Image (cartoon, rainbow, N blue to C red; front, side, top):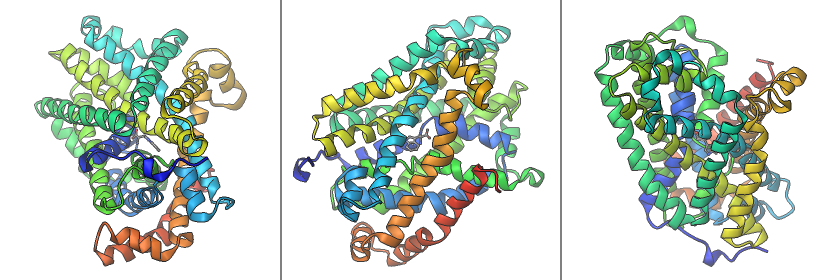
Length: 455
Ligand code: TRP
């Protein structure tokens, strides 16, 4: 049973939608992943390639997603049903979105849980008292602890469910309006602090200087994958948020704003982190441990540890929460739009199912079956396997589907009308369609070939 379109919830304001969509985009991907991937790839040219990927691949796909959502006023499965016909294979793209949202949130919530754990250590003053030697092993013991992982994962899922339970304007929009400005302010304070550190010049040089020796083709493809992940593409999240827009709302302008915000925040996050890293003699290429190991060690040596660490991990939690709600909204809206469930039931059922699916991810750092057991069997624990599957396969496949559908299958008149109803710039329209027809699919295919080791 399809819910009648006239009853569909909508955003209360234009800025509400922008903040919610930017909240989806700005997440652990910006503050945790972007800095460490940039660090591993040597900074400089990686950043430049990343910017090109956002502009030439990410932005066109984001416009396509939001546009399809707004046009159909439906979540992914319903959107493809209404544009391609209920029995079309394209509906599979909608299913893929729902599946990806379940899988992605199930382990994203575990990392968000680590952030909550550190936020708690910071705010309760524990981090300040420990000193660098005792901070270093904290992450190792957290990672291996079943109890702590399960506890914080479930707390975080509870928070996510609570927001989605409230609905589009009273849940997602209301919380985005609080959390996003708070996030920007916290980040600014931390950036100002980093500006005063000795390592700032070195960090700036590292991020924006050219180091040609570090450039690799693999790095370029990683930049593309990262752009996709960071902009929340390929999973119907932007499509779903777009479906709560009214027909007259501007899709193109909003997409540009959201992409720009997301990119600026990833850059500012790096500008705030690397001076801390360099000033305290840490390695910029520390990998995933950058935020959870190197940063706490550095922060524990700075004056005002409790204040700075609380700001930093609070920031991480806020960023993760506004992203997680967009993932749960994809799952929830499926049950509302396709099954006719009430929001409260849909939010709780989908959220609990994801929380349960996340249990093995929470146990992945331990020595049990889902941790070192699986590592021994297939080379990757449960968490890493899902991360690999979603980031390298499901999201790019979803993005490829959206691009091909919009460029080759969608009704041309409808597509043009929808695009131009927001922006009158015909030149951009043609450029957009061209990008979606050839360069975007080719770029995504290259990422696949890289993922299977053929490139
Ligand atoms: N963009 C988020 C981040 O940077 C992650 C995310 C949220 C996401 N929703 C998504 C990724 C949907 C892909 C699809 O952390």
